[in-house]
Length: 465
Image 1 (tube, rainbow, N blue to C red):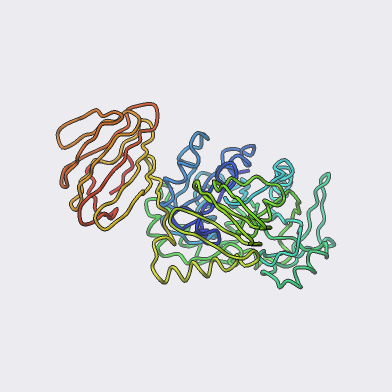
Image 2 (cartoon, rainbow, N blue to C red):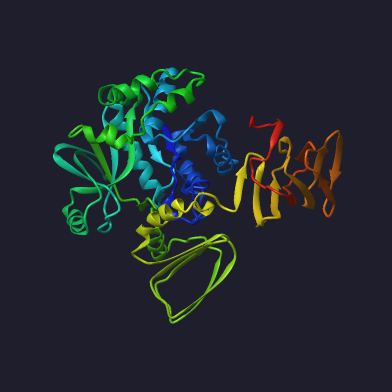
């Protein structure tokens, strides 16, 4: 099986930790990011393919550092076009590589699975069914009456197959997010399962389905060249469509469901994270919480923060350096609406954190004022920034740790801990880490404009313009 991990999405439901520039799959609520955990989970099936956006390339490489995933297995979409495009792109590339008879397993990058062994057994069973040209999905046994998930109804009398403790049934119907009353009914029915968005099919089979149900869409995908040289042009002309709406919901009675109960969650809200914590899952928060007469509260922070609670209950409190969320438990579905309101107000905190991951490392904004900006730069070992110039700001660098080398116009300088350097505007410069450990530099910018677009690159290891 060729495992395909879909790593797109904006993750607005978990704002302010998850944002457009740093979506959920990269967040480390548990011991590591969702994306890294998903790659580890699928490792026994071979090296997976990760489909993500060009804008998330640096984040993806950083999240997967040390996992041995080759760059050829990371497919970069120019712009987001939903799951149908991502799956079709992979199918077209695999067809170019004469792999049309292989089974593709499609998995979201940002889900939680507790019982990995049981999940792998179910995935292996689903792969075997897909080898017989079936379209297969995984259904999750409902643990409670969830109104935030889609459901599927199975018909065991039309198709039934078993393998040890695993079963497979025909999917009779896909159901959108139900009312609370309906969700309770589905939980009791024994014929309804949560839709996890996990699919298995042969590459040739999904191409057939694209040709049948999304013919105009596939005609465009089919023009993608093996070297992907026309990918941006093709994507610019594609409709944005999910695989569920585009194909799966048009296949009544033709999809097989393998139900499973392996501790799955899409971790799609702060209420869900609070529930998981109550189930004794360790959630990594930097908040140091003190409470008096306060119960059933969930507090999360991505940076060290003392939080004192007095006489409050059933609150969700999420803190970051530049934004704070406070909501009642049971009301976190309103986070998406709040994000929409803040987007209309054009607040940068909606999409951006005070830090950014770059191909060479990362930076954190420590202060941002009208007359100055302060950053903490961390350059990975043996990496360097582009050879660049700024026209509207001067930069003052203080070297905190590591071994740095700077090219400043026509001079090359070595700098160490405690040393400083002034870089006037219009001076060509480049920062390089020549040592085996991270290079940390405090950068103070002065001038009249501090936007990231005040840059002209002359040389760049990462082909940025």
